[in-house]
Length: 235
Image (cartoon, rainbow, N blue to C red):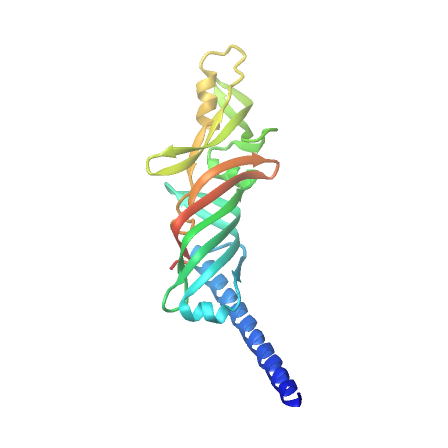
């Protein structure tokens, strides 16, 4: 009985040591991956990584991770020379195959969400309009000031924000449902030149992660993302 007790105690101690080392290793790996993501993306904010599954060491030795969750702030994506900021990006990478140097990997599949605030959407329009919540899902309020026939005219319109196909990618499209013209011929076209716009935001997302759908609420425009063979940490 004493021998068994000693064996149990030794097993508990060794098990505790293994768990401690394993948790230290996963914490170190999470920090290094977060640093690499931040460097690769040129983030204005922070990056957080969580590696799931236990034990981590056996996953690392096989270069296969079950799941890696990523949360980043201040992601700048660029398309056609125009910059759009995602205030937050969250993604879950599944079945991750690490590269030989453990500096990144490729996920068999991934899904996530991103948020564009109205302030950042206003900046992305690049035409002097102001965007706010439109009072319902997929609606935004767009306010523009235009010069028309020697007069300065300000119009606020409720617009639909949608995700539409454009070639091999998808774009965020903002279109006014209607433009109050007060019977002034030609004013609708002038206002729409300011209020209606498209923005692609694929460039800057982890390679392989694509836009799937969107909606809007008081906090901004929410994007749903998904993809396969998705790069993690610029691998």
